[in-house]
Length: 326
Image (cartoon, rainbow, N blue to C red; front, side, top):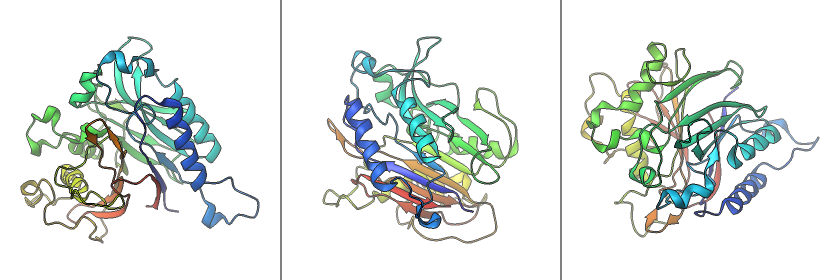
């Protein structure tokens, strides 16, 4: 049976925690109503995973540490975790959601994501490794490393998952060489070795899923007259390029010379027998101050030596629940 993935793309309002929680819950309830005894299992099957954006319920662009302080949550124990636990149990699915963490042990602030199993138990609390300037402005510290782990409750046989948050996909501080591909090479190392030093998470081989909550900004060349339902294709092309080591053949240098996917069709299909890694980006939409977010949450299949396959994506300015089977 394929894995069913749900992405909740919406526009949280900065600092309106309860409004954002209520709004997200209503979006889910409109898409996944309570099952009745007469419901068809084929049409009413709930997702295996639900993914929300980075800092899903607080908003993102806090100008100072004092501004975000009232919204910091204790490690895997605050409002976001409580919501994720309830949703996981209610619909019987895994939930990944971003939140601003105040470490219960050290008092350190992180940009984090909590990952919950269907029983409402915490699988992982991932701390963003590469920080964007906005994270630093409101006082976040770098997490110790990227995360990967085996999730036995995913699907019939379990899945190996790699987690990141937004800026993790970029070169470190925008200073590292573009073709170092730090996050993508972390995923490949998960295929060939045990957990490396400094990494958050477990051991094993064979990454199946790459899950990344985001608050990613609109591409500067996205058409100004675009409709809300139009995906920001340049942004998706850039995400795919940042994962080039997962799909580019070893002797193919095209990806490195085309960092923004210009001239490429990111929806082109691919076929083959090599293992496919599924990349899932859950981005937010809307605006905060002068920042406009790209939306365009996407599910992309990546297979070595083949053109990336976009399984599904959201509009650049829509609030929606995207459900795909992979």
